[in-house]
Image (tube, rainbow, N blue to C red; front, side):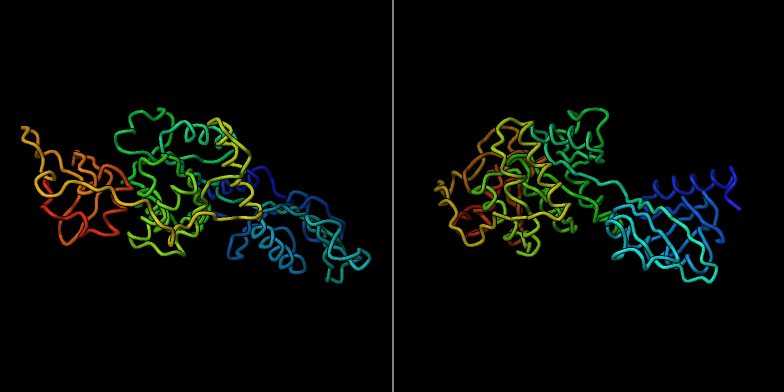
Length: 362
């Protein structure tokens, strides 16, 4: 017999629990039957990623058909109507459309049953890095699209996030990604839009964690510089090949809202199997020449009473507050601080060019 009200309640509670746990599965519902078959209208089942089935939508003749078709629906991320019929040979091809499949009924009873299969996939998570106008617009529009949006900002910026926003700091990003199971990580995408503030830090965490879809808001020239720094920090070309830079589609966008639309359009194109060009690599490109800086005593900090709180960038001589510094690198047991990621890149390419005095504050 068909499911009674208590069974239906249990089915929907189970679906809700699986969705809350971020599981991928398919629900199967009998929507048409022609006797003699053992299933009834409204019979339901859940098919898990591994093929395990909970519930009942038919006997031995249709069970394996439903299981196989459910896994195909899950793989493609699209619902489908499976029509199990004794006269399947009268239909041209495998079905009447891509989402309506006709399969022969092999039981001697020669009944028929239609089963609707609906895949349930964990929500897409979009990490939006930065507290810039473009990042704000990307987050707003992505939420309107049904994405689960999580903001990634510096510790200092966290207080300026909207109180209702889900936020992570740069320090929390890597551990949060490492804690995700593989299926959940596959449904994570990221838009890095700090616009030079801490793009490299976020990209390194994202790429080391294995996030597949990463878009960087940057010009081609700056993107090449960013990727070069990532290579100097040990990332491989295979890892950085996952970065889409410049981000989005070329729509001639100018305003933050238009740029956000172009970025999200690029994500949609990527997810639907469209063309994906990675236009920035920069490994072999010639970077801008290093800034010539004074050597010797000019690298020492001045004599103010708070000098212990600061270091001096060996590249451009700028004072950098040590607490909360974003850009630093360790070389031969000493930590050096930098005023910007480009200075860090120049240093890592040729440390000996800049090291003529011990770095204060280390």
